[in-house]
Image (cartoon, helix red, strand yellow):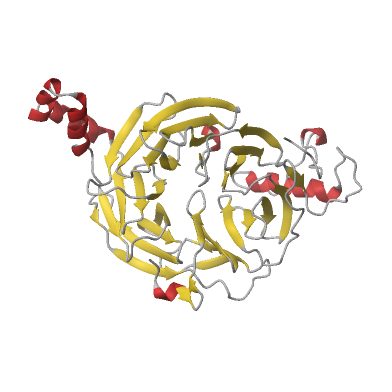
Length: 434
């Protein structure tokens, strides 16, 4: 269901919406281009950047840096990394199949295809590792920890049951396989620390949180008992104290991650009739009783309509915590949230995001489209003189690598000097990495 104001004569509009890693900005992409909007105020959205030429299906910004990863509707197999402040394309890669997901942190860029994942070093975009022959993943479901010190990647380990494969993206080794659900996975999200992961299955009734180190279950929450739903997004609050869940219903659930309440609940349960009866009942019955007794939502928010995919975030803006819900039909809903009270949240502000035909900013210039997808993975730096021999770095190319390096720093640095050019070899065209 879409709001009438988000439709034109050709029918409802649909957008790609996503928050950056620390939810300080929101990107909105679609057939009319993409915009980057600041979230420093709840009362108005200021535009950071507007590109009216890149008809986009995936747009990812690296924290508050000037680096943006873009996949266009016209070239769904091509990833571009751009420097929006300079209006330049730093590099582009083409893949053998459609790009279904892109994830960034300050150490890695992960590109997800249906049956493979590519891991790049963000500072020079060198391909460090390829995970091939993964279970079919048509929705491009994967998660990358925003914490580059605990740099973990998660993706489905099975297409039929809810197994989560956790991969150490820094050391390039498999970490652990977690059996999270009996049915296939629908959503994944890392906590800000990168040390725990939230999961939901296609049934959509139970949300779980696991430890990345040993796979132990830390929390279990029940979204509802009346019906199965399609989970569209899981997200941890930036403070790490709450887990958010949205679906194709009109309700957003907020669960409180509070270990003390878990221990207290366990002690109480052991002294109740349910705890005593469980020792005499079959495991199937006790599992059902346990399910009915799981922790429920600490707070909820009701959206104006159901059936619209969205992304969610809980962050401090101004003087308080705010629940942000950005929908694919072009709206941003802001709810006030009192962490000490919970309950039903009140809608504070609604912003319409579907005005992508406004004046183009000075950075909204069309960048080179690059080569079409071919055999294997093809990489090239925009602006490279094609006569350069492999291993030779041009001045233009070297500066583009430095731009990547500076933007990936935390905070970004004004200058960087390589000690050895051979450590950062140039990307050559028509390089077959398969």
